[in-house]
Length: 372
Image 1 (tube, rainbow, N blue to C red):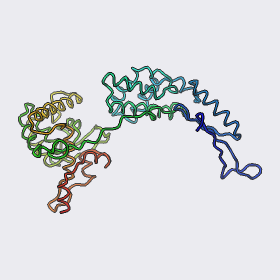
Image 2 (cartoon, rainbow, N blue to C red; image 1 turned 180 degrees about the vertical axis):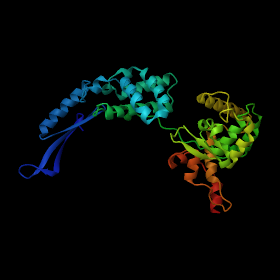
Image 3 (tube, rainbow, N blue to C red; image 1 turned 90 degrees about the horizontal axis):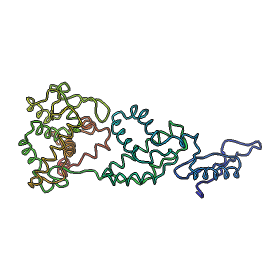
Image 4 (cartoon, rainbow, N blue to C red; image 1 turned 45 degrees about the vertical axis):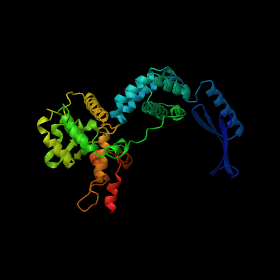
């Protein structure tokens, strides 16, 4: 494509002209500085003239849209996206999206018209975020995802049909490698084959009454921490070995089967249940409760690492990996797998095998036992 455009001859397979011959047209397509537009003509010279004019207009900072992309700023488009799109399609992500929009608005390129934003603007934003310690790879990918969704929304709903999407053209940080940490085997746990037993013994010494039951529950049930901390007395149905999970990350309510060992933990810990939530960390705010549990685990694990009792790099979220993997490793008396993907997904809340697979790190001996 020379000079930002090309002209293609198109011979119709269905339409005929007055002489009974296939209709020939010339399709001009402009792709220049994140904008893509096209138009069809009957004469090639007209197509060439139009395309050159459009490239020149884009170079001058103009747009071939109805004018919206040249007048509406990125900041204004983000506001509309937050008001109209997020509550309807991503209600659980409204708080995170609002925070990211506020951060994007702090930077000067948000005041530019949509049509004039370039990849250079986005890279400058990346550099600024890295300079103020807010530029982790994960954060930058999230900002890119949000920006791209705003541009897609503007193109689809805000009369900017020819608007390019510069967020699709930037080089995003690579996603991190999937964690494969398991107790006593995968990752740093290989040097500590009794890691699980050590943790179960050491948590009994913790001074918070909720800490030991919470860690044990996570090791068996494989729930998201935020969901575990939401379980209330009214949600539990121990007689039927299940509990109700309402509002959650996956946006669908469900009854969750209790793993037998997890139910035994709840029953043994019953006298210390909170008045509302089962695991009462001492704060009613869910975000604070999650942070308190995570910080308590970090301090606990750091101490054990320092004492060389467990391997390094073990997070509370790794308990979910451990539990999911163990659910796959459980077998019947006949030696066949106890649960399949649909049953385990109901427990863990994963919507697809692709996401569930990331939490599954089977031990080789568990597979050997099934075959031999």
